[in-house]
Length: 401
Image (tube, rainbow, N blue to C red; front, side, top):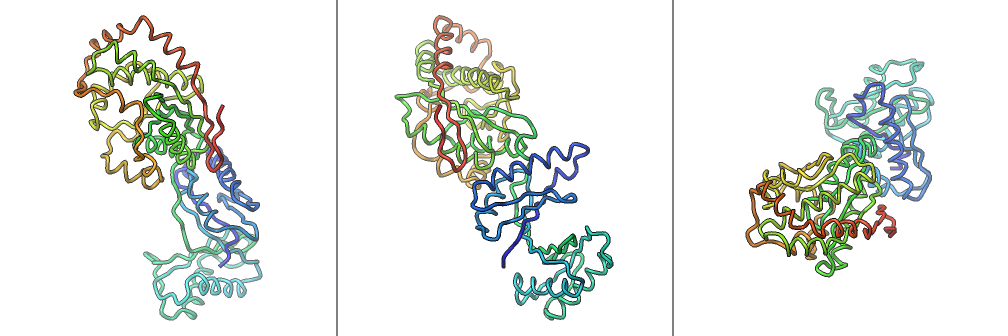
């Protein structure tokens, strides 16, 4: 069966008020971006409260559906067959033909749902549904009508032409990217942070990212792993500006000057300071981390309070109450899991105390940081000035700046 268009279903956008058009326009923009990577000229149009994707004569169905499934804001994708409007008798023949092609030998329950967008059409929606249901029963004697809980809903929209569809492919859900501001993701090579970025992007937030690199203790392959993770997240979030910060000298200085059981907390506090610097520079409205309560020593409530203290921007932690198993499930869904488990160390795993503090005292942490006063500002400045920026774009080679 050749489908001529896709009807796009959205959920939350439909209940918006006077600003609904802003979300619809953002969704159309993201769909055009996603479809631009596929061969063929697609046309995305808003028509009478609907969004349609009109397809070229020849296109790759699977590629098109996959591209649309990565667009946040879409909850359902309905492949549509379009017929010329040539009177009711011809429409009935076309609908029966559709059923024979898409659901041959159908023997389950069904109902016909008619939407008469063309109000001048001489037959009411209820009458069209009843009559079409009768014609289908004539051709499919083993089928039955169930208007309350059917196994199959056949939708017919009467416009300037006749639109017929019966399948809804699940979309990514959420809100269109760019409708809820921008935030900075602290992206490591682990399982949690890509999931956190995906979840915040799903709510319409555009994301940039920062990664802390520690050569020679972390390899170029570890850095490439993070670039690959960013590309996977960019399938959903759109382009990501990745800041690669050389954190080695800061880590070594903290290691030399501070108590070893406080290393992780103090390092994370400086990571948050650097991430916030780039966040403000990029006009982000918050930071995103993949922290989950109690997962490791640096993620107890006391530790999170200690890292929060150095930030003036809000810190969003979308997986804060998730079990590891729940996070892994999402990482598999978005295809980041296999990359995340590649055995390359990141800077958070190379200078780890044997017995890190789990309930840090803020006064003690501040006192330990005072031991860094001689050189830390200079090291921070160097790290900020030598940061490498990589523009990550899905399906396109990353651009190194």
